[in-house]
Structure formats: C-alpha cells, structure tokens
Amino acid sequence: MSDVKTLTTKERLAIAPQMMPEQDPLVRITNMEEVACGFTAEQVMAEASRCLDCKNAPCVKGCPVSIDIPGFVKAAEVGDFAKSIEIIRESSLLPAICGRVCPQEKQCQMYCTVGKSLKDVEKSVGIGRIERFVADYDRAQGNSSIPNIAKATGKKVAIVGTGPASISAAADCRKAGHEVVMFEAFHKPGGVLVYGIPEFRLPKAIVEEEINTLRKMGVEIRLNFLVGRTRKLKDLIDQDGFDAVFVGTGAGLPNFLNIPGENLVGVFSANEYLTRSNLMKAYARGEAETPIYQSKRVAVVGGGNVAMDAARMAKRLGAQEVHVIYRRNESDMPARIEEVHHAKQEQIVFHFLRNIKEIKGDADSRVCEVVLSHYKEGEPDEQGRRRPELIPGENSTMPMDTVIIAVGNVSNPLIKQTTSELVTNKWGNIEVDESFETSIKNIYAGGDIVSGAATVILAMGQGREAAAAINKRLAK
Image (tube, rainbow, N blue to C red):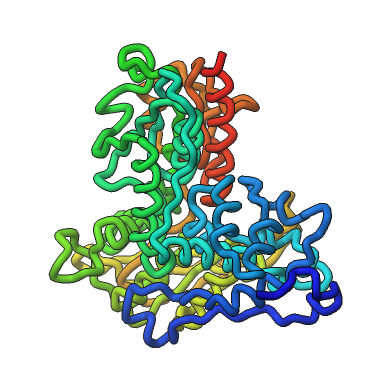
C-alpha cells in the first residue's frame, strides 16, 4: 500500500485516467450482461491516486447527497476498501447503483479540480467508477453493513413508492428510530431502478440486494399496493395511524408527440417497452410470460438516457437496424456521454436535427414508414442550447416497423385525482415548501414527482432532505 502523501500535485496530474474494461460491442448486443466490467483493485488505486485531496473539496458540492468524496477516494487509494465504503454509506444507501447510473460528468466530476486543470471533464477523477468498485468489493466479501438504528420512537412513517427518493427517505427515517412501511404498486420494489434501467446497465440482482438492506433495517415493504386506489393518500394518516407520509412515486406517465399514426401497431412509449423488457424480463424468450414486439427496423425518438436505453435494448432484442431521431444537435443531448458512446459502438445510427412528423401504417395498421421534419440550429435558449428551427417543406422518409417514443414523462395524476387538497403545478408535479412538505400537513414529497424527470441521485438527495424534515417534525 502506498502513502497518499508521497505524490506531488504535478505527479498526480500526470497519471493517466484508467480505462474501464468493457464487453466487445459485437458480443454484448447478443446478451444482457453488464457492458462495463468494472475496475480491478489495481486500477482503482491508480485512479484514486489522481485525486488532489483539495482543501475545499469542490466535488462534494456537485453531489446531491453530499458524500465525503475525498475521504472515500483517499481510502481507496491505499487499498482500504472497507473504510471507503463505510464513508460512502454514511450518506448513501445505494453506492453500487449510483456508481453505475449517475451522470457524474454533470455532477461531482464536473467540479473536480483535476478535470478543470486538464481542461476536460472526462479526465476528472473517476469518482463513480471508484464508488462502484468499493461497493461491489464490499458485496463480494459478504459484507452488507446495516446502519445503526436509533431507539424506537413509537412513530410511524409511510413511504409511497420504492424508487430512489423513497429508498433514501425510508432509510433515514428508519435510522431515526421510526417504524417505516413502504407501499409499492408493482410486484417488485425498486421503482425506475427495476422497470426503467436495463440489465446491461444495472443488474437487477444489485437492486435487490440494496432493497434487502432496507428490510434488514426493519423496513416493511408492501407490494401490489396502489396508493390512490388500494388506499387513498390521506387515509394513511387519518385512518391507518401513520404520523407522516413521504410520496416518491416518480414521473411515470409518458409524453407523446401527438402526431398522425401514434395509434398504429408497433408504436410504444419507452416506458412500456422498457418495463416489459426490464421488470417483466420479456427478453428471456420462452421463459417470460410477457411478450415483446419483434422488430427489424426501429426508430427511437429522443435524446436522453431513456432513449439510449430503449435503442440499445431494441438492438439486444434482435432489431437489425436501430435509429435515434433527435431534433437538436449531438452536443445538446441530455444523455450521458458514456451512453451515447456505447450506443454508437453498438452500431445504432443517429439522426440529428430531425423529428418524426408522421407515422404511416400498412393495410394491417402496422408501422411501415416514418416521415421526418428537418431542422436547423437557431438562437440559444435560456439554458444556452441553440433552439431547433423547422426548415419548412424539407422532409424525408424512412422505412420502419417500430417507433419508440422517449420524449420525457410527467407525473401520474392518480394521487392528485384522489387527493383534492394536494396542490400541484401545471405539469402535475406536487408543490412543496423548502422542507419538502406538501400543501397537506405531515405529507411530504420528493424526487421526480416534485422536480419532474431527473436523475437517481437528485431524487435521493430530495428524499434525504424530506426525511430530515420528517424526523425533525416527529421529534417534537
């Protein structure tokens, strides 16, 4: 083991970033195994040695759950992986998940001094890859440390949903000594982690293990329980004896393009397509009871991570060609750089400054062709991205048999429809105050149901903030 103080700043900056081992693209499109194979211990220690251990720790301000990043990275540098994961778990219950799916290049790594010094965020310290390794190492050793639970308070907290925001809220409320019950509408817990993110990016066995940590902490999880139908939201407090409720049901209602042909056979929302293949494991032909549409030529509309997931899944399900249609330029895509890179490696074709204006069907009402509008770059919008401007009269067509719409989601209206006192905004997101309390006393909310579709780690951050407010309220 090396001494973390033996290298100068100049020497640390001279260490090359470690490359993540990956499955060969032509092999991985034939299986559902994880694409990124993970660092070795030697690679982790080398990558961690690039950290400058900055006094002001700028990387931490980019982490929505405020993990002590320099602390866990420095522990990893000397091979003390047990200490490294211990530091992470003080702030996050999902390190193996966040290490895989968080957009670190837009969060912690964006603020990394190394990346700024080398004028390239991709050369920042691989914080997420180190986090993934130490979490996997801990699991491989048979360790799954359970957080300390405070003395029982006699208070009960209901958590609606079992996605990232809910997991964080449940963990922090349980650590405070409250009885915690989670309610999940599906037959498996995990929310977007199980229905939205493909196996090749996030193995579901990892999600199950993280969920089991909650169970070991004493959290009860009730499945097939749809709050709003099985039980109304306010009934949890008024009739069931809960002292506080946290709503973390996400943004699961898909947007559509509202164009001709969206009702044809072969048109899917990305939500349905990914839920069938991820949660229901429809890719396991001959074993799964859920069917999946057989496609040869697929068009995926959108430029985010969900679009990348849908496109890459279609490839693995046997599509000969997969095309991503995006109405802005590549530099404006919200998808992770790594996901776009992987998609290109997997021979997925990108069409920028294009959008589908019409879907045409054959005599059997099945998709047979798409009509594309063409765009050019206009003036920058408030985020600095150049607005797409339609080029009148300039269109093209492409033969397709499947169209997957991945242009974002909005909140499911069920809870609002059955809870008239709950204030929501024009997009259907629940409005909350600075403590994440809703318009109804003792009912809190966080994650995508509040902010709109965002990231796993941002949802976790809001879940933690809401839990802190709940714990403060219940301590009175």
